[in-house]
Length: 127
Image 1 (cartoon, one colour):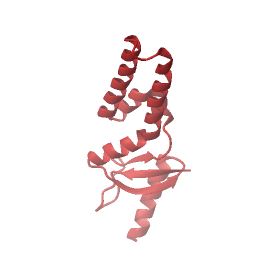
Image 2 (cartoon, rainbow, N blue to C red):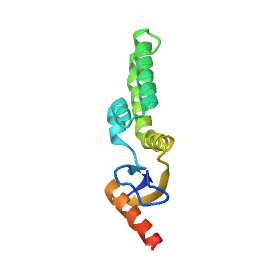
Image 3 (cartoon, rainbow, N blue to C red):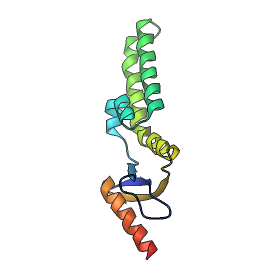
Image 4 (tube, rainbow, N blue to C red):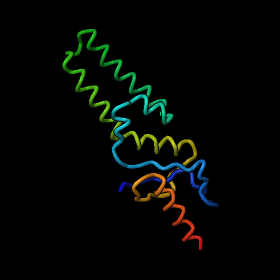
């Protein structure tokens, strides 16, 4: 079970399934493993740019001799860990900026079940 935020539900009518999105609250293994690619896939342009810039700075510091080569791996790991821990929160905030604010938080085993539970609860409240 995980918690999901539901984004893109219309406040006046029902949810528009084509636009509604669910975002989980757990650790993102994909963001941890694929960093900038995951960020780009979720249209988090600024975060992807910052990630690539930080990785480039670490690599450049190693090449210039400012940073010991042994320090590169822990720093890269820390950046990946940050992306894994905060990736979904960055995505939630980006959706809110794009006009899809969070409507509700639902506990479910996956995003489809979370959206279905949200729609069922909304119908029950409307009745």
